[in-house]
Length: 279
Image 1 (cartoon, rainbow, N blue to C red):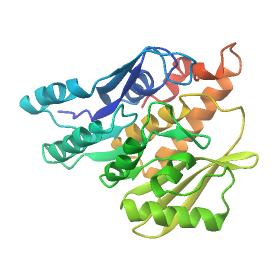
Image 2: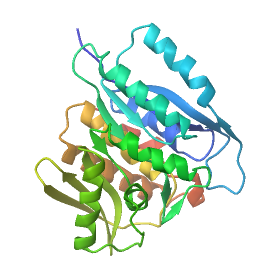
Image 3: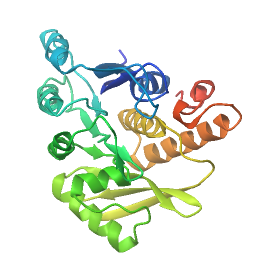
């Protein structure tokens, strides 16, 4: 009998704007992996819009997750994204510890996407305490996928958009002191290109994958990226291959979106392109 991989995705549900769970569910599913959502908060739309409804789901999470524990569920992977409160870090840490020992086969791969900000700015719903507690969550990761802003927040490094090679090396050293995870630093400005830099602290090796910059930044691309990487790794891809596939798909989505009259906050048009992710 076949075994379908299962990925628990701990993230918010934003009804409008193509991000978080509304991206992860179709993308992960298209790649042949069962996506099992854990909603950390409910938003009418994501916080890049000038107004939004926000419902913190912290008090409901223990009962929600408790039923999964009671029923003996297990997962091949765990992906964490946006967290609505500092208290959720404790809940997510307990989730990782429990399901790390509940797997029927091997320990689930833990991918931490420490969603905290972009462009040097922290998202409006995140408190200093939550940002600080994210460092503890990072220590549980097998794969850590911050953007440059989030890497700076995690390491208390002053942000600027164009890090030198020496500065990036120091930044990776600081991240490695927080976690033994393989690190994928995403969306690094490399002039006419955008780079994703993979660092393996076990070997000390760096790998830089560049894609030509083809459009202005849009919301939700990081969620598309982490979903593809996570599902790819669960399907047995080497991390380099999964990161390259994710970058290629994001670029494909940006090119597709250029033909539509939608704002940057509305994310990328990925729906017609899901066929390119299918096994």
